[in-house]
Image (tube, rainbow, N blue to C red; front, side, top):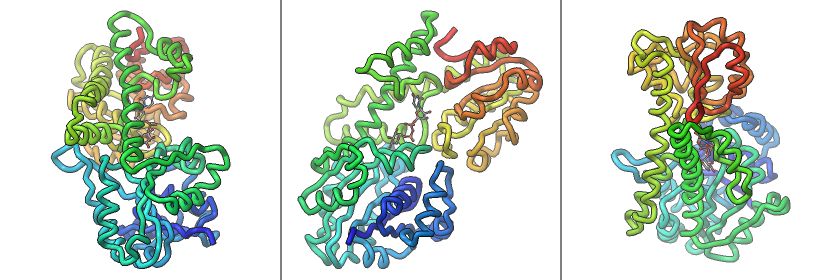
Length: 439
Ligand code: UDX
């Protein structure tokens, strides 16, 4: 009998993981304390936009392999493997990770674990957390040693959660026994058969792989954005520089796109929590450079505001600004720490009338930024604008016809915040095209 799987916490990570585990052929029970969330997932209605997830949920539910519940008791009775996918947001008033959802999960599930099982942490946590969780589980679980812990960080990207989960580029397993290894190998048999590397390690290394990967990606993005500042000073072109660097196989072109920088629910919070944890461990100096990575990233936002300001003559007072994009990146509706909305808000505070359009993130943006104006299309956001800001590189914006948009604006000024548009095409249509790190 294949192991039966539960997924504790059915947010973005958990809902995607549950649907993908069902797709891989396992019987899966998703568990969340939020009744409304459980109801909507039970009807294949995710509460966030993720390409392909709705269809996968539908297939899992229809096959009878996937269901959702609020009951920890049902989960404990059902599961041989319990994946923990709860959120670890930034704690109020500090940069540290708030582990209260994780602790609540262990404290609720632990006392119900009466038979042998493997509890597998996937949440992003400060190094040392897994060892604490293992100790707590041993105290709580009636199954004693039979209820074991493993740590198996998740590397999925929003907007690519389904392919990233079904075909991960590596599986990292923090383990303390051969039994735990055998169980996780059974769970991931399909991707491993496809050639995905399976790395076995201790808890601390597994926890660190996750935050180190995010710190590296953030550093790479800030590196190219620092080069963009130098290009601005020297009159060089950062997009050509990035392309030339990317051809070096040792460097690679992924996460090397210069522009407005990184946002979202992971990179910004994870590098700050990593710095805080390293400080606690007496290794603060080792990660001091991440403060600079964060600062460069913040400057991308202020430089974009300055560029837009230049285009409208130095002052936003009485100006109209059309903003294309609200999500922190395309193919998602997530606006957490969104660079696009940060810039939109800054320009609004400087006196502009800002109108925003995003293909998927409108509801979230409206709810959290009610002071901004919203339009139903890119063309309506651009109507009467003195400057148009492309801040999230959705395909529909890249496909927009600059000639048609030119007809609706007051002035043909465009800031390409993601270096994603074709400057020649926009200039030919009469636009004054500007982007960071280019002249
Ligand atoms: C990231 C990691 O990629 C993923 O492995 C981890 O599990 C969670 O954090 P995600 O936040 O979904 O995933 O997005 P990612 O695609 O990495 O982009 C993060 C931010 O960086 C976005 O705001 C994006 O616009 C920006 N970015 C990305 C750049 O500015 N330049 C790039 O070249 C790449």
